Length: 209
Image 1 (cartoon, rainbow, N blue to C red):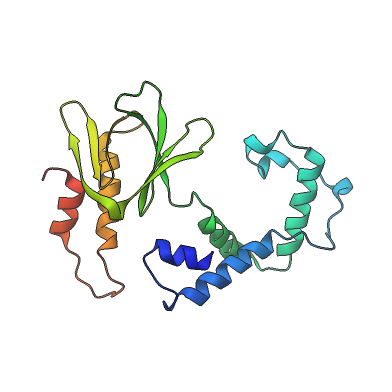
Image 2 (cartoon, rainbow, N blue to C red; image 1 turned 180 degrees about the horizontal axis):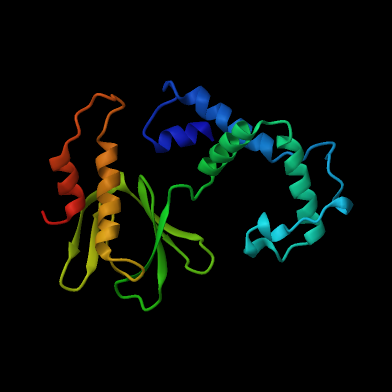
């Protein structure tokens, strides 16, 4: 999994972040292991499952959900408040949809509404009801992107195909800015002293040229 994550970022196994990536994944997996000895008795708890579980999972057995919450608590009970918060953030960042911004769109020649996910390196067509991924387009195969300001349609050209859509949940300029912003960030190096190229930033996010 660490190898795949590095490859998705365009890095090799020789990259210095490999060990950190691997350790982070192992810590995330350890959080999901049931503890052998939960320290809380479910019979003595007034546990509101709705505070911990997404509504789409509430159809499952409440007893099993309560048990899983207690087991998860046993894995973090010895952490300090700061450590618990940091672990929460790390686990959140490892979730598949972390950093993906969602927009309701309608693709050209389609009558139904769909979700468009915009990540730091890809666009994703998703089912609006289930969130299932239907297709992914990588930025490294993108040739151009622009907005038709008259009819508020956005067109993105990839090596394999072109896609055209209208955005229903925001101005299409917002989607354009997301894409341009991520492209701009991909051009930045890790050098903290690197000068910010404001002209390039506005060119990529402005949509005027």
